[in-house]
Image (cartoon, rainbow, N blue to C red; front, side, top):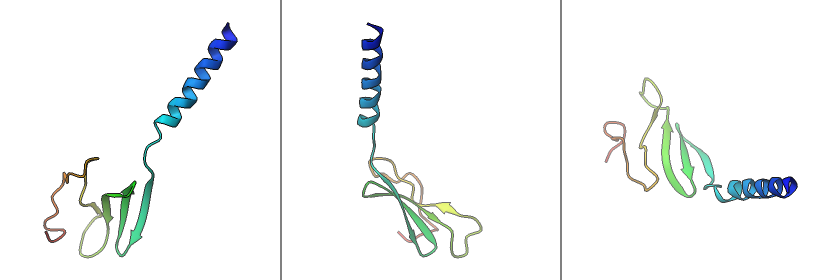
Length: 77
């Protein structure tokens, strides 16, 4: 009985890991920035070029694509 219980636990743990696999995250390097893509959607850009005194993440988006940070004055709208 213990062997069956352990087998079921291992099977469920394996299925849980398979089911919870999310979309792929990719980093695309550009000129002065790195785009963070989740699946095929842009999540944010790590901008570190120009007259910026420190790197910034702009625009930062939610899973549904809503921007939660302001772009101005970093980018034109």
